Length: 255
Image (cartoon, rainbow, N blue to C red; front, side, top):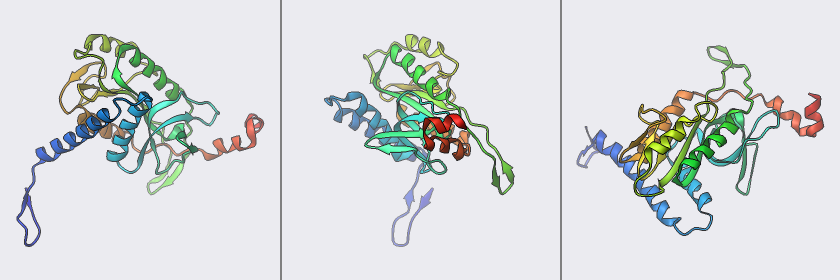
């Protein structure tokens, strides 16, 4: 396809070149980040910031990505989550101060554990972290829309694992897949990426099977966008259910 402006030669666009260019830019950003954190003391924190920065750059504006703790209206908290993708268009951030963030359970679309590399025990650990979020209570109130009153059932919260590279040159794929199959309940991991090697749960692939491929980070990003698109809008939060905590623990008990 050719486009151009007056006085300039038309540009020959190629869908293949555009999409490969996007994937290559994502890969380049992550590669540069890997090099830059190679000698950082707080390697875990630096690794999650690499993915947060990538998601903040490329996801649509309605989404935010942060390291955060998730809270529900019953006063229950999740584990600390490395990467939380949540709604910012309709939901408040309950608390944010000097890197500490608390978001309401209703706002959460996806949660990820992020590590420098991938190991079997890391996947099991990630499953526990994901389950701690999915177990939380989520409210939903009826809201008026152009098509009448509507109340959304809370969507499945996506869970996954992110790593920059394998632990060694030859990743033990079979062992990793066994770990993924071990928990198909609240701790199920839906998708993930090892930036320099491949993905799981992306492009229609089974969530318990690793796919070794090039441009892994770009493919993961587009898969996540597609999954988020399928989630629709976050449920309308019941603000009054949270307001009771402003009177302290005693006020919450009285409600």
